[in-house]
Image (cartoon, rainbow, N blue to C red; front, side, top):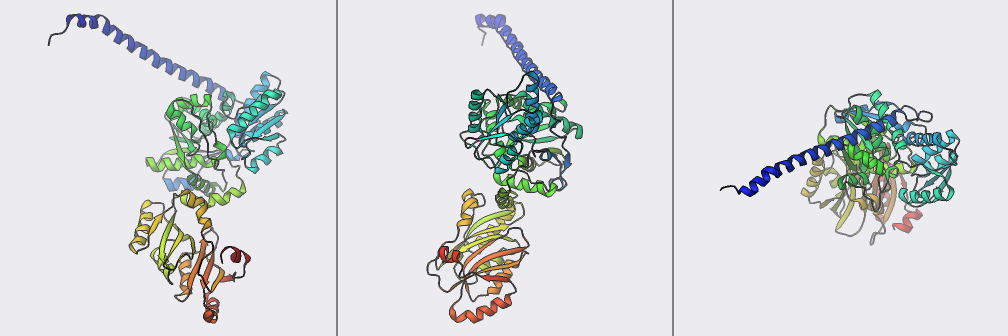
Length: 542
């Protein structure tokens, strides 16, 4: 078809010129973005190189994690910020900010908001520089962090249930008392102070493939990313957040800062609802990816770090290791050089109980099942024989009805889904109705401790605490000792990692069998204590 002469001439005269002009504009915008990126990077590299941190901080070692490296087939190194005097990297940014501020003006006093680690950094810095410090902390802050700040002579005010509520309270006090506010992450001097970690990494290990960094407000990853990408742009910077405190991940996806309605408090050191404006801008330019991990994965990472270093991280301090493990598995990395930042070790001792409970699940080395078994003598033994190649980590049962029993059982497995499927298939093949509740949060937090209660129609019940060596097969041997003569009406067992397993057992022993049963006890070879008259049993279980 012939061209329309009028439209063709218009395109020839003007269209090609417009297309050329748009191309030039796009090129200009691209170069403008590149220039802005370079200007931002040059600014921060200079600030990092001139940062003042070593009056309070030390250059921390970069340690090879031998066990973790061997397991995952990569060279994994821990940057040991847990070895700082306040057991966290936060003193770097805090001191640099306060020091730079004190050079420019006379400071009446400083105030900050913090979940704990930044608070210690500010308190130590002010003690060193002889400046009064006020620290506003959430009511949820672990006691160990509050006591540590008190020891550094700072004034402490507790406000709100999260960092963000404490932050608003601190800003109000700052205006009322005319104090200088020291932001925990969203300040160029704070970011530069944290960035000194990157200078040490580059001196200690060059040409790294990946660096994994925990992310809260973004100060640490911003400082590390902007410096590393200047010297080694091919090194991947991967941020790690908890699944229930993932403000940076969502912000980068939305291309603007988002404000979370709530955040999980397990990793209190990174429990931030909204990331910093400055840190967000830097992360947009220099961070390759943000990933998330859950509570169980953090617990497993705490154990991994302990196995390699004998140091106990707080949950936020183990975030990077948890993220590195997840990333290695998902991307099937091999023979890579990987740095992870162990950012803090301010762990409340009583939290170890919860961490230990969740570690095996986080490592995919324990599954939790609900299993229906016939309510008859010998059912437990048959059940244990079916899973005889695996150790039972937990077994909870209370008599409920005459025909069928429901038990809560934990089973140790190797870290593969195939093992889990094989066990469940084997149980179902033997007519044991089985449901997997490994990822059921309510079951992990509450139900496992609540199974029990009073049982109706249980007669002649005796209660015993038994102790036996914690070796494979011991539980089955214990059940064999009971034989087929007496019915088990209550059973509670949990492997706590000690040398001996402890079991609470209810056994129905008719009066006519008392002598026979006593002989069986004497011959069993297990240590035991009868608890039939225990007040807790009488009030809650009988």
